[in-house]
Image (tube, rainbow, N blue to C red):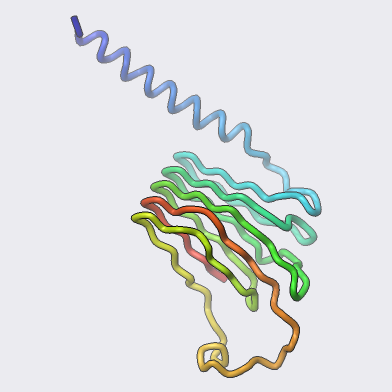
Length: 157
């Protein structure tokens, strides 16, 4: 027989489980900038998380947002022309913002499933007109892989 007491007990068990998961993920997430050549990880579970990659920092990354918001700031990353950085993205009913320096090429291979991917970077007028730029060196390249499920991925400068 299912009583009112059992329903309350189950409700508190679910609240405790969710709270434990949130605290566990937050404790697992490192608060220090990654070492040179290491990966930059950002995880947001029912919360908001921000990570800025320091100069000489990561060359790959992983961003996970589950019912929360995660932001990865790559504007201080010093990729040389022609170098490539790969970031794996998973957004489930959450939002991910990736900030990139001006002049980077972004190759979005992430798959939206009932979600959206928007490139909100400001572009130079010559890039909009289709005129060639004065630089002949290939721009640094960011490759975004993963899935956006009922969430959003924004690329900003």
